[in-house]
Every structure is written in C-alpha cells, then in structure tokens.
Image 1: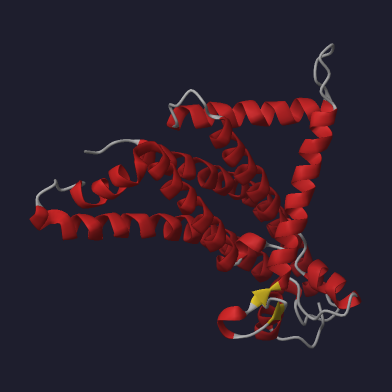
Image 2 (image 1 turned 60 degrees about the horizontal axis):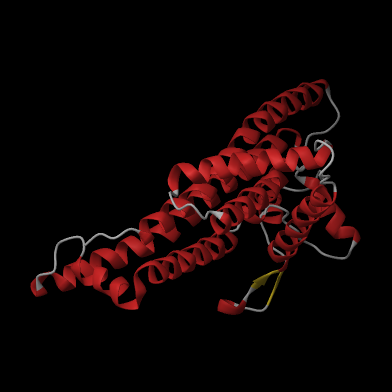
Length: 271
C-alpha cells in the first residue's frame, strides 16, 4: 500500500468500480468482466470433466469431482422439488451454485492485487468480487423470478396463474381481489430483493473486513511496531479467510436452494 494514502482514500480506491456511461446507464465493467470470465472458467471445467467420462472405467480426478457435485445438487434439489423430471432444476441449481462459488471466492484475493494488475493495464480501478455489487446480485435474482413466473404459468396456464393472484391467499370474494393482488405483488417483489441483498450484504461485508485488516500497516514506516502489526495482520487475514470460505459456500448454497423452493411453490395450486 502506498504510504501517503489515507484510510478514506484507501477505501474509496478499493471500492470504486471501473465504469462507463452515467446515471441509469452506468456499466460496471469490472463486475461484467469478472462475471463473464468466471462463468467461462466454470463452464470450461465442466466441459473438461465431461470429456473425461468413460463408459468402461470409473470416473477419476475432475470428472469424479464434477459427478460428486452434480449428485449433491440433485439430492438437495430433490428435497425441495418433487417433480420426477428435475433436469432443468438440476441445471439451474448447478449453474447458480458453481458460478456463485467462483465469484464469491474472489473475496480472498489480496486487496491490493486487483488494483495493482489493473494499473499495469492502464485502469485505475478494478473490483474482482462481482457479488459485492448489488447490480450483479440483483440481476441474478431478477432472472430467477422470471423463471418463477414462467414456471407458474407453465404449470397452471395463464388463466390459472392470474386466478391465483386474485383468489389466494384470502379467498375468491371480489372484495378481497385487491388485497390478494397486493399481497401477491409484495411477495413476488420481496423474493428477488431478499435474494439479492442477502448475497450482496454478506459478500460486501466480507470485502470490507479484508480492507480493514489491510489497514493495520497503512502509512506505517519501518519500525518494531510495524512488524508486530504485520504479524497481527497476517494472523487476522488467515483467520478471516478460513471463516470467509464458510460464508462463500453457505451463500452460494442459499442462492441455489431458494430459487428451487420458489419455483416449486409457483407450480403448486393454492386454490
């Protein structure tokens, strides 16, 4: 870290996105770039794993690991989704879990490394943690809710889907149509909001804590106390990295399971 950099400047620099455009049409290039890159890496790994499948031999290495993840995802999907045909749900859950794991894992990248590499390429800012950007988590949650609506219409038809909006949960009395619509609308909106903010909040908090740990030696000159602070910084960084790994997996698991639950509920008939 630069010795002349204050704490506020340090935070501002590390929490600023590389952007183009302005206002509503502002694009976070680092979020988009990292999301696409990590999606390609995850897809490539599963492609390599699929290439390793042999009908005359037991799976090994990456292929075995990929099959283990798929079986684990299928088991968890089966607990919440009772349809016999779970191919789409398994694919959705697998993609969400692995992609979010890859994005969340960027939280353990050393704080100064991304901006340093970006500086070599001529960019002043570069954040590598896409899930610490509410625009990213909000977009994923929005797509999930589109799937929920499509699943409801597919299972009940347009008429049945709209009928539930006016007849559930309070009943089909015309006087209750408006309250039913309002309650269903609030429920529909609250799902993507809670999905997006839960993932964003946890990962952004983790990113902030890593930056706070990095502040131990900010603007400190060479001295015995600086060595002590550096040791504390390393211990705190390793400890939080270990704990953060649990958060990385847990948040990916939650974002995998809840869409399955939402789609399963959308396909049920409530009267």
